[in-house]
Length: 296
Ligand SMILES: CC(C)(COP(=O)(O)OP(=O)(O)OC[C@H]1O[C@@H](n2cnc3c(N)ncnc32)[C@H](O)[C@@H]1OP(=O)(O)O)[C@@H](O)C(=O)NCCC(=O)NCCS
Image (cartoon, helix red, strand yellow):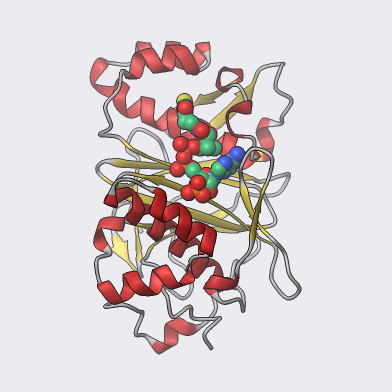
């Protein structure tokens, strides 16, 4: 399917300035957009499965979720501490985004395992990365979530490290100054050599990729951002390189980038290891509070 084309529930445009080695492809059994409150299609109650070397990228626009029944249902799946945190946000839009994020994580994970959305338990590593507390009968799911104004994205894979970053490219800021301060010298120089009208898009390409990598490692900003570089060449897979201070193997990683809307970029990092590339399926969605698998 050509990039940007829509079909079988999968809808993603490629980032124009970056080739997409992992072009969005439909799942064998696509999910439809949910209607009022819940997904009405009985056939969609099949559990979602991750094939070997497959990852799923779910994304949702919080603004599209205004149905009161759905919002109430989302709220019911939150853990008490998540609800408490929700209430601490000052702005309603932040409360809403938090609700959608938590509900997306919980209800999406319940597509893969016989666990009620409200029953998932998480622990965080010392850098704050949430992971599932494993229980018997649950596949070894790994996930990473990212939110920016207008979009929440969730990557799910089996066992391997996955990192996701979404940015709103309309956010204000001095891109060159930030790049010079935080990016590697090679990245900042490559950015500066581009025609001015291409620099902003490239900046967000690099930013999201860098964040996806540190998030996949689960170490946040304790990984110095200037110690690794992304190389974006037309027609070539996205490459990473590390300087001698950062011990990691560039060949162990796979990256992909998407532009689901004209003002959002998403980057995904997957620890591929030695095997072939992962297939990454992209899925626009809404939190499905009837939780297909768990509700059966
Ligand atoms: C926390 C951090 C991992 C990502 O932050 P971010 O880009 O602001 O936020 P995102 O929306 O992409 O991700 C936040 C989510 O990542 C998850 N997360 C938190 N710590 C994490 C970690 N160490 N590793 C992976 N994921 C983490 C959480 O689920 C969090 O969402 P939640 O708090 O709602 O549960 C960290 O990299 C950070 O603080 N970045 C600051 C941004 C910056 O300066 N970037 C410069 C880019 S060049």
